[in-house]
Image (cartoon, rainbow, N blue to C red):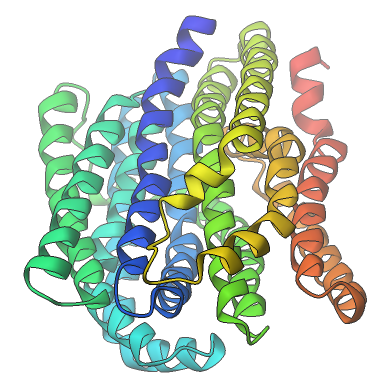
Length: 436
């Protein structure tokens, strides 16, 4: 079982860790452009807008993964092919919708996030990457359901290496400023989508089945697919609201140094979350597979062993943050572009939150993967609504006397509540494991 977990977890971990590393690299580039603190803050706001878009469309990946894994476990390869076509069709529709509505969406996002001209430059350049990014969600969800983590890993590495290379070229070689980072994402995302399609055909041409449009649009599977998508969309919308609010609340403090510090510290948390997601994705794929195969014993082992490895990752990250957080943050700082002493003093004041969060979030992130694999989307939706309500209640209750600490307190409590509530409301899967 550990071999199966690591076969899925390690490629996912590698592919996921490239995302925050790319974020760290992009933030470092922004820190070396003119007024470093201002540009870092603008990049953080711009990225949070696209996180809002992408995370709200990530239901395509999650629902595709769970249903595909269960069909794979049951040996129904005609249904896995139908799921692939459903995922690509829905992804393409969403991507084209964002492109067509980019101006009203952009102006609303800039108003909501208090964005300036730098943020606008970033948004209207990067928006052309959205269709490719959403279609990659659908393809990666299908690959995960088919128990293949290598293709998403290869694609992620290529996408992020290209993003880094083109960012350097566009920003410093072509003097495109913050828009250069955005256009680098466009080139990288579309290249990644083309590569994924090539690898899909090369690897799965013998597994794909000829299916009729009537099978793809069959009312019962489609009803389940869209029901799960609706639940996950609400659940993901809650996550996006919380994460976006984190940046918006930081921006509205009116202190560019605090905004930059919160942005950099959030990169440390993101680095952990993407490492941890490797085991969450493994649990997701294996849960769906063993539920589809009706294999209770293997499901129990998969969840238990994944939890152990998740806690190990959390402890490792805490040790790294305690010992080397200054060195990591130093990657963002240009001696001539930021007030170094002021930045480090502010970071030292709040870094304790980032050190504590990995221990708090290890279990919630893993159980998220289990819920996706089991397609218990209604439970995910309900627990997220409750946790989000608690987040905002804590923030607005403590903001008058805690200031920036209120942002971190509410965020930490929100993550902890996700795990507690999901476990309390997961009686259905616990009964399956116990054979009841």
